[in-house]
Length: 116
Image (cartoon, rainbow, N blue to C red):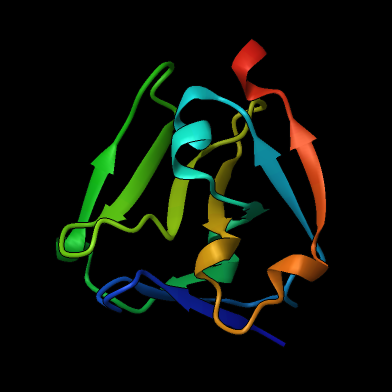
């Protein structure tokens, strides 16, 4: 089973070829404290962008290993792309942007990104 998501205006839409997650990571780094995403990580082969990359703006900070993508129109950040600490490609899904997910049912795992 797959799940879908998008930014607020729908210009950036995607599908992920896996079951919707039951848990999320909540990070306390400087950007996550401000944006408040609930993270789920997957691999690029399971992620399919439905919208155009022309609608995406990108922000990088700190070590520049994660491309924090957001919509040029509505400003919402539905996903990011980058590499894991061991160098593998990954896609981060902001679960707040996933269609039909019950955020209150997610098991939240804290991550101390502020100390990294």
